[in-house]
Length: 337
Image (cartoon, rainbow, N blue to C red; front, side):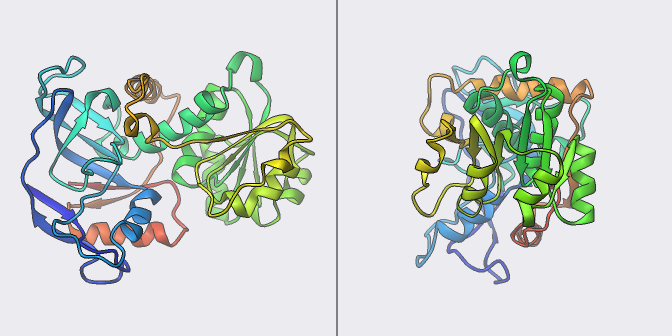
């Protein structure tokens, strides 16, 4: 099969930052699906792993990354019960296994959902990773409940990005929250409003702009940009007994003591936790993806696709990574095979 990968971590401008090569078509394990991939999307995790996973070394076999895909089930493992050959599926993958930048991929059925019927393959391909991340951070980490939390305020830092775009929709349309999203350019402000944000504030003057919007403090904060850079700001803006959650990690210890006087909770979210550790509730990602597919088919949620490239090529992967690394992308980028 054709695949795109890399042997060493290079600047995306370098000729061999991505290379095309022939790989052996994988064989599904007992719980696996073999999927013929029709479209993929790219996420910041892609370029972060490309930049870091083969530093100062040259791999013998190119590494295949990519964690979003739509495709057709070609074969199933002997214990598979959720899908059959011919099913159209979408998923965000498993960071410990081969990625989706290839013609075929094997994937555990428990982290796969049915493709939304109403969306094109490229519209569906941009959904899984960001929707799972946003759903888990809202409903599994913070444990927001639409009945008890309806009308409460949530600040989403990084509203126009991939995760932010779907988190705005979920927070507004499913949880019934008052959504404040950060953006600073006219096009990103407009995008956040189209996703359903009630207020859009400037991340360059976050405390001031949140207060100007009429909020002294907020009930919940989601960080999709930089935990360290926004930590003091989040500690000031969070309401007593509120909850902060982040997906961005930290290069240094987080000063949790700054949350103590307010009795504020803090959570990390990593979409790969369930598959990486084979947790008892790993199948929840299958259920979440199917719920999201229903919401998309019902028109309650909408795709966050903003750009499509055509063809599984090294050049298209390079272009997509260049766009992501610029930090100025809006919504999501898909690659249709």
